[in-house]
Length: 349
Image (cartoon, rainbow, N blue to C red; front, side, top):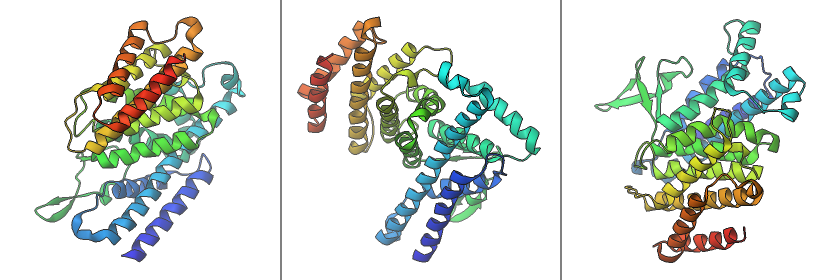
């Protein structure tokens, strides 16, 4: 068993290297085969009868799989930016909006299809991987009719028998698996170059925020662990860029709209009533929301104060009310401590 895990880790390591060095117009179909394996590994949850040794090897392998997805995300953004720069001589990067999301994706697909026929290039494959991972996070499902991922690796148990998933069926991913995928976005946000932050944010934040605000926090589709990871991802993107521009995605809504939606999401995570069997997950979510509140309010009031900021006076008042409540009467010592620190920091502005 140990040898099998070592070979699997070595294969994933090699796949990570390939993603980093592959040429844009190479045949990228192999990436989908790797992705099928990676998603399968991430979806495995240790069971009591498999023992600690098995669990340790599995966690190491899952860590490698998270790194593979992280590199796919970063490489996708890097290649798309390079494509934009090559097409327009870098003028858009210096003088205008960074990307036109949908039109750019369509142009890249047309360009790749023209040059390679029906073959999916590495650049096209990475774009589809990016979109697929976001869809799994926000819908918890992957349908077996896209032709992107080989479903032969995915099986289900039926009366103790293992059956392949049929065409048209869906595979559902647990909150734990989807948190692993979100951790890939956190790592990508931490590792990518500063010039890549805006595009990364515009490709992942709109759907993530729509998903987070689409219903109540629960024990499934909006599990506290998933929400905590999504909040942390947003926090890293905002703080690394030192700007709220990453929340402006060119979808027709202004930066102010997205800042206010993100602020609403953070407050809801702090004060919302959550039904969950995991106190750790709830605590992680609320602490992540507090950190994002600090980033949003401090940048908004410090950078945009001359123009009135994106947040309205009533939203600022509500923020202070929630923070004071958390600092004074919250049951968790960590929440009280962080809320007090945030109050002191925000009052400087």
